[in-house]
Length: 100
Image (cartoon, rainbow, N blue to C red):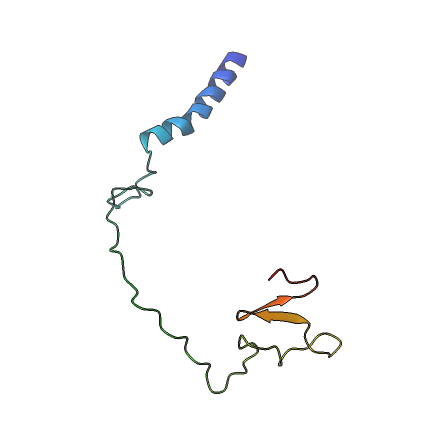
């Protein structure tokens, strides 16, 4: 009985390895032309997005919280001015000195 259990365990452990050998690109779904991870399926054409455009302006009814220049709409929990650094269009919390 122990021999049969050991043999069944070894056979079950070998099944995933054997299945992977048979399908190195994964299984082929029913009705599909290529395997799941097939490298032979056609690739889409490379698209040139064109030149980068300027960002669109905010809508007229928007409340702009950060425009990349200052933090005037922001305040700290104690209602004082925000204690963040603004540099290069980004803001950073100043719990420690900013490395930039």
